[in-house]
Image (cartoon, rainbow, N blue to C red):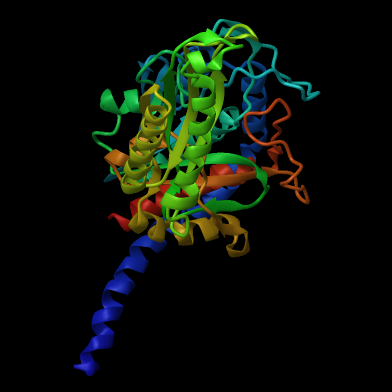
Length: 433
């Protein structure tokens, strides 16, 4: 039996490596084209950065994207999930449909960076006038994917399959809308003919030239928490006449901390329960009738999410009951956990190393931020990676983080972004022949 074991193992390995090598032979062409298009990608990104648009308002961005995809000969659909754009590039040979995704929306943040392409846009958000800024790097994602589209369109006859370019609106959500962004795109059927989906996110605190990835749960599920504590109003000078919702709320806030310290197995995955605002009362000598708390929940996996939700309800309602008050707990699920398909991730590790160099590929810790790319991954196998955007030698501790007025991206990593996304396509197609 041992005599026949080696050939049996080698045959599929040789066949598999042969099909992959056929597609990998396209990498030098990709490298050349990605480098040649670098200045255009930077120019696009700077234009988008100067003219950011909030979720479901990305009309200018979407038109630029749609016009570009049409100029490359693609079938283009506009107004997908409100303002989204989808382009399909048909390769010269039969094969799978590979989807690549970039998000287009900006944030209600007023930029502080002194740049020649500093954001000039303002908007009304949640009833307040605010600046608008690409403070999470979505301008970078759009520009990189436009570059990938141009690179691959120039070699479409060599592609064994098709590529779907998904330019998604409203990744950051839309105030007051129950469904937006990736979730709405999925509902409208964007993923039905897709075999695998890939995406990247620029990382302001990871050095340029590096790529980060994680197999399995990579980013957290995010839920909105609302707790209303109902008491009895009284004069502040006679608190014994009240059922004080402020004191009760304070006890609930402290009680919620025990979920993470005593209920969640943090050796497996982290979790977060944060109360971000407390509203109650109108005058210094009046104990109010009720108090409202709002916050965010971050969990990894359905089991952990169920546990945390259960304990929030139990702690809030029982502490309130012990004080003679009541608590109404409402938890709204937003995005599920971003879960990189383990098999697809394993297949693509050589691709990451080929694009960035083995020393520049980093296995990430779980991230308690959330991403609605997770909705695409619930439909088909997906891989979501991080792309370094911090200047070389920068300090991640002092470098401004995402969603802040000082958020800044070094443009030196854009070519790597174009290269790795293009590699994903040709390598995946080569494996699935």
